[in-house]
Amino acid sequence: MIELTKMNNEKFYVNPNLIEVVEVTPDRLITLVSDKKYYVLESVEQIVEKMEDFYRRVYSSSGRNKVKRSV
Image (cartoon, rainbow, N blue to C red):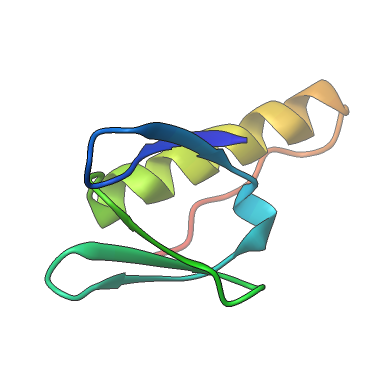
């Protein structure tokens, strides 16, 4: 899970496997595969970094290769 912050400063956790799209509208809007949407305070770069950190932890703890960043 990754920690994000709603627009009202409330923290919540999301499974990054369920994130389908991150948009700037001009706020950051996260859409999950279930079509549920969340506006968050984190920048797109911060969200991507949190997701990358999550996948690094998952893959390094399972003994698999680390996730490579592609931009």
